[in-house]
Length: 266
Image (cartoon, rainbow, N blue to C red):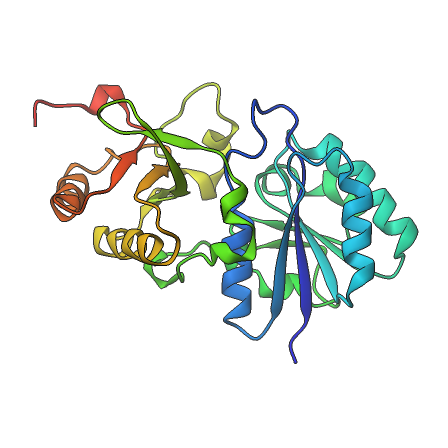
């Protein structure tokens, strides 16, 4: 039996609706871990005012080898008391931080009380769950995104999320979301990612892989409305045109982000 890992997604009180989107990062990491000999679960604490007691109860109810927390910098004020409470109740439990926050400032999360902080992409960070590994682990970037499995959205309550995508007639449709690309080649002044080497590396799933996942989502969960949370889908003109041709006639409603200055008549 592999190590049992519980991944926690903390609250995001700065959002208008914390229950809009499922924690796709944590879900994808757990999916990969479950395919590689671990037993990983995800607990989404978003929108729960009693998130600390809820997390402690879940930790106490089962035997876990480690707890992971996927966090952004903005979520850190909620993560700090959560870690303190876990340390008090379960002093010997191995705690690992991952996500955009630790990638940007890993030492800060060691100071908060984590045993380990993972930088970059968590899907390749299996060493983070071994007690003997270094305290700051810089995971290698995935060069072939198509090697990732489809995210197992059954790791969370997919029907509890509220985000809607409007069709061409303005009708709001229940939706889920994907990430068609990772990284961004631009240098916008408001984005701390411009200074992170891993984030500046633009990589894309193949259009065939994305469409296969969309069909999987429709078959398993019934969603045809999809929000793509990639930073921009029109960086690579050839890629986008091929992707669009594969989508034609399939009946999906997609909402995506674009870079306006890259638009052409085509």
